[in-house]
Image (cartoon, rainbow, N blue to C red; front, top):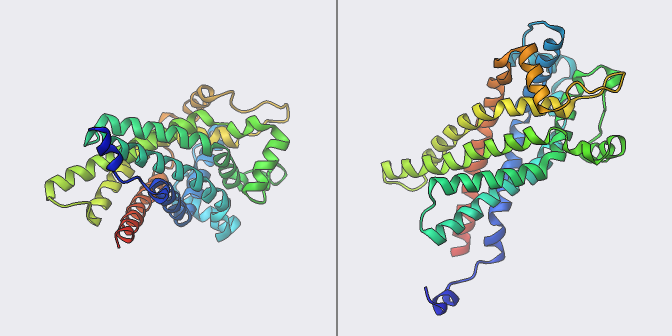
Length: 312
């Protein structure tokens, strides 16, 4: 391509540049608001499993049991404890991960004509790493607010909202506390992104080729459903570990229950059993798969709507 033809190409507008980030953040926040009660139930299941493991007991950790327990002890409002932190997290996390991935793959498509499977993986891993690192402080707040009702009244943190949680964490524990559980959180974010975005695009492209169609709603739903299952299965153990690390408090001697990720994994397997790394899979999948589907379908709808408006 010569220099003249480069200058003849239309330059992207500001909206073209920020559109993947805006649509990603809005669609992620909407999905989180709709599905937050399921996420709260998942966190409470993980917390109960941990407590039973410490006591050497086997108890009921089913989704229905925990949902009834939340409703009985804290009412409907208990399902929405920490909702503001979840929305704030999505406005950071989904904005970054979906925007970065879409920008990277669009640039690859312009340069190479097609985006290979390996390049999709590179884009998903990069976007997942950056987005999860940025969102970790808010993730800590969300997990603590959701798990707070499981603690004895005297040990509860009683954060008022996400901003109160962020400032109190720094004041009481230092800035480093914002990054508790950051390693499994980042790995979880990379795994989720890897098994959502790359498979979603790949499945969608294969269905398009097989049916000779172009990104129909049914294709988007099938592709996002498959991606939701993959991301749920492979990311749940990391989600379980990061929940325990983020919500932990020192005992009366000032000793934390876990010294790090390896110690947490070891103690979880010893006390609860290896398969308990997937405890709460039903609630996790019930939250993750619809979240993936809602986020991706809404994101594509907004993108198409925006594109049609720009043409008119």
